[in-house]
Image 1 (cartoon, rainbow, N blue to C red):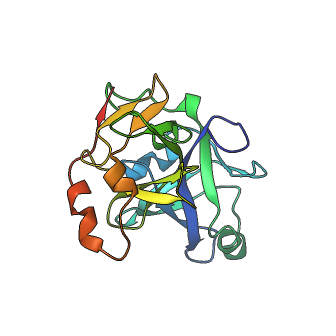
Image 2 (tube, rainbow, N blue to C red):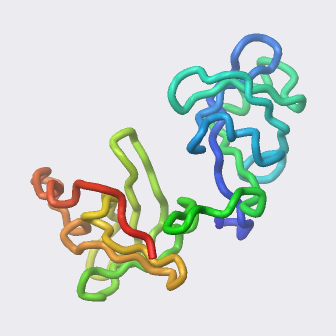
Length: 192
């Protein structure tokens, strides 16, 4: 769910103009880049603009070229750069068993392997080396922590119980000792 309470999923973000007729580059967050236009009209995060996207072609991994009748010029396409685009979650197919959408994790209560509280999942990021969970409100720890989203660091996810198990060692990684994170590398976690 987004912060405004709407049950939407972010499918991608505008990445700039392409050509002079309003074609746009989009960074996709969908498993198949062509699906950026498969679920009906998308809207900006604030809901002020809606677009009927037409997939044109892949540009490079996770980037596509698209057009929308609502984007009529290069300047309009360029002005959208950085805007995330969302679709109502009801338009998406239900996830496979033991799968979930990333936004299903936002707001889950985090607990360690001893069932002690570790705060809440605030966001999910991927800077190119794999998914990271951002935890906030961690008892006795100032600020937030980024935790590798791997099976070793996050062994259990229970969407039904609205909680996630994270190894305490993954949260207390010493930034001065990067090898401390070696124990948290591995496969994606199991989903209940």
